[in-house]
Length: 230
Image (tube, rainbow, N blue to C red; front, side, top):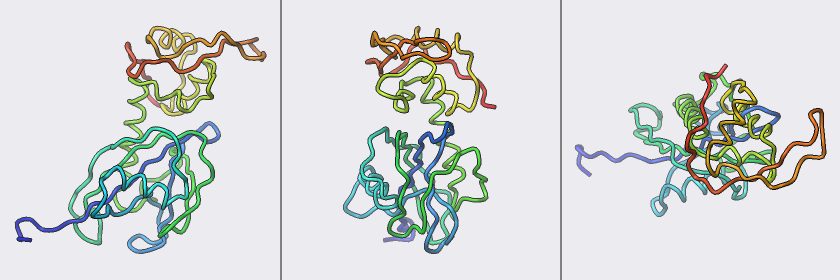
């Protein structure tokens, strides 16, 4: 290959979010090899010559964490190719965002020394290898934006849920408190966002509450108004 078109490698990196103990958590692995041995990083790896990007992302999710094909949302986030971002050479990475509920304790695989869920709010940018702090920040913003315009928050709710449970998911991912009455009106105005099941909870401090399930909408109109995170 000519010097005008030098060879470079392609990797995929995964930003996997779930909710643990009422906090937004991200999956991190402790690197077992150089570069950045013993540093925390997003799970990922090199794309093989015979696979496309989506296949590589799905494979790495299983290999690096031991999570066997978890159900949830997976999409491309962005590409990162700043020269020098990887000390091994010219490497471009394609990052993926995954929103996955009810995930077990991860098990490190292949070249990872450990894997664990970490609260996003507790992560220092300097703790992460490569440029993964930038990728993580972009993924947090994408996830927050998606909740404005799509019904993906219901992914983290039980099959039947209350509006308060849905609001708590928004509060966790947005990192802010929402007025319950304003939120209820916003949900009700977004056609097809949720559908009443006709059932109620068994009780509680405020008495029985109506139960809902995800509706048919794929885009929320009008969107759910976002508040500045605390």
